[in-house]
Length: 70
Image (cartoon, rainbow, N blue to C red; front, side):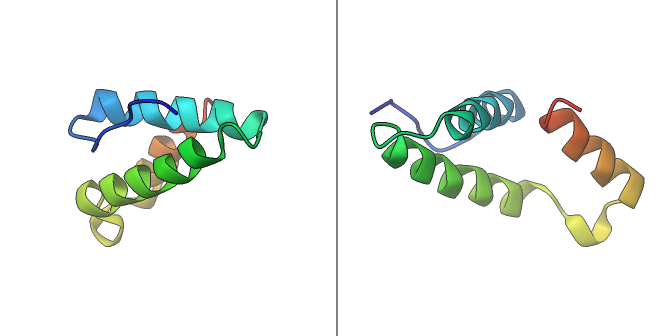
């Protein structure tokens, strides 16, 4: 199990999203707890920091594409 903590910066958020995507590309029972923890941490950061209803749809699409390496 890793030492993931509450996300406090955009840089940390991007690092955790990358780690989360890597874990999901090779899900194992060993990384299941970390995947679930990152689900919660990422969701909370997004809820607290991304105002979807106030965001321009193009901005949101660019944000999602950047975070998913597209």
